[in-house]
Image 1: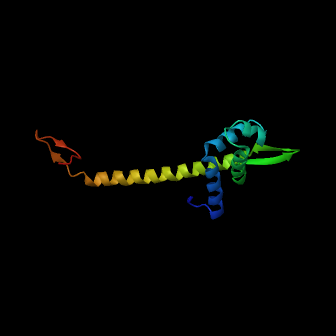
Image 2: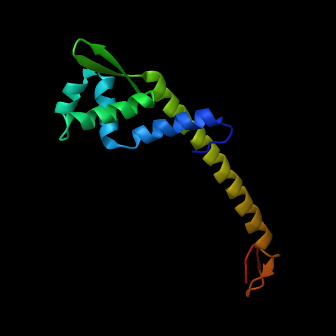
Image 3: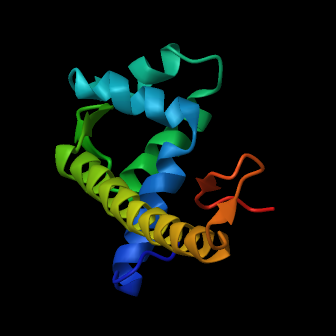
Amino acid sequence: MVVDGMADESAETVDRLFHALADATRRDILRRCVRGELSVSRLAAAYPMSFAAVQKHVTVLERAGLVTKERRGREQLVRTEPDAVRRARQALDELESAWRARVDRMSGLLARDAGATTGPVAPARDGTTTEGTDR
């Protein structure tokens, strides 16, 4: 992903964040873990997929920095990392700002071009003048 002014490492981090968030199951895992840490086995019980598949989803979230895993006895507890969620929000805010600026520039160019294509004041059939009328 290319974001104006971002270093390659930051762009890779943002790519991992959005790749992780692109999957509905991973977003749901993240939502569940926001409420409190959960074991991978408890998470797996909530989905119609294998334990291994849920583990893979958690690993993708962990690589993106969205969750951390901590082993306690035989359980692996998953907890959401709020800083990573803030980084994702910040990246979205930066993209929004960049696109709004681009749209504003395009609007300005279109308005300028529209002003250039409207011709001089043309007399109407009844003798009055109408401004900006293309004939």
